[in-house]
Image (spheres, rainbow, N blue to C red):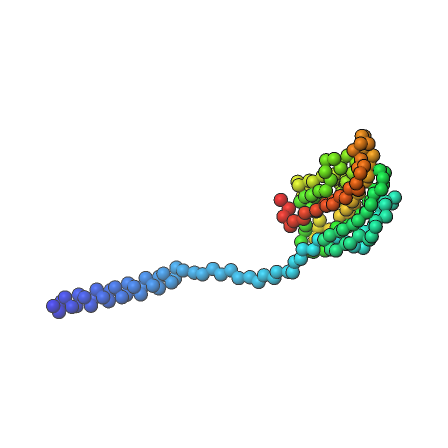
Length: 187
């Protein structure tokens, strides 16, 4: 029994020494790699709107019944075109005063029916390109802080090839809209 107890003590001692050696050996074979950094996130803004100071009525254009209302992201106007040959035309700039680039993704134009299209020419010119209908496949950049794009709207009462297409009994009121859809996504 003494021999057995001695053997147990020797085994326990050997195991304890083995555990200590393995712990020291493992510690000697490990290391830590650290990555640390400071990040500063600058302020950013998205600010695309009409520049009220750039509004101008086109030469030869009919006078509007009242001054247009320009409120940041909208322009509202009223005009009466009395006879073929009369038109209203105005221009205004779209500006990007934000820090984030904006991309014109589409122009949506509504308000002229097929019958009215016979005697109304409705065009919107954006940065030199003329549009007469909706276009949903654009990706035109308006740079942050410096981007400016000229927009010209023209509505003309024209004499159609067939004069019977003209309105004859009642005045026709058109609610024309043009929506310039911008996004920060440039894909």
